[in-house]
Amino acid sequence: MAPTILPEFFVLLGTDLFLLLSLLTCLLESKFPKTLPYIFQVAAVIGFGHLMISKEFLAIFGEYMRFWYCFFYLLVALINIVAINVHLATSQKMWILAKAWAGTITFPSIMISVFFVSNYGYVSSAEFPLLLLQVGLVISAVMIGVSAALFLNPDLLPKLRRRKEVNQWK
Image 1 (cartoon, rainbow, N blue to C red):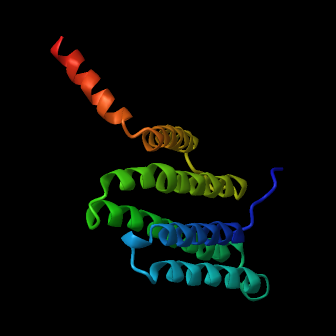
Image 2 (cartoon, one colour; image 1 turned 45 degrees about the vertical axis):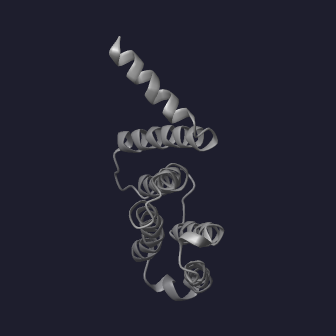
């Protein structure tokens, strides 16, 4: 039998995502309110507090209830990642940074979360479609590659556009 993932793993993953958001919003301090990194740090401390007390206090709920509580915490972290991406794209009008954020942070975070939740579902004998997971991981890998290429070489996109226009006229 495959080793099981405890439901508290999702709180640990969500805590790591909140710490990542805190660090990145601190690095991009001119684009976000000054208190936002601290709010993410408080959310991470709440996750660590949950991990410390969950063994004793949440054992009475059972694994099913612990899963949904921990999954909700992870879902809140993922929603914050998407919200920052939308904030960069809409209110800040930084489309290139929003695309880079989506390719390097949003999609990989969501796909990693989908992978672990589906793994937990398979081990706990809850059925998730395997094809959905495989397609999601391939899309995530392609998005990471494209966004990394565009981030490292910003002149690549205008060159591709010019080639497409030249080939269109032939």
